[in-house]
Length: 138
Image (cartoon, rainbow, N blue to C red):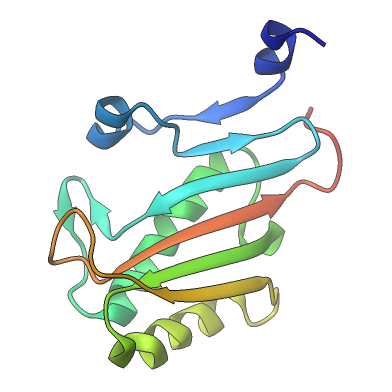
């Protein structure tokens, strides 16, 4: 398969968020094998931070990821892996609570990682999700 044929079989979701254009990335990418990778999502909605605390930011961040999955015809039940990046160990329980509420029935593989910060210091959570279509993309 040539590089052109391979890239033609990869589906991409672009939401128009300013950093996508500025930094040259897609919100989500679906590979021909049905694996969907969603870029890091924060609680920025319409250019503003939505939700102040770690729980609210986690829920909003996952909702940004879910919106990208929806554009590919997938949803939370298709998520097989999550990564939660947080800036403070004190936020583990709140972010974990949000994850449990959203994924308790799904039980994806998950990681929570403490980082030094994000591009906006008001952000305390960023999430990534991976989903699986269960077969080749249509």
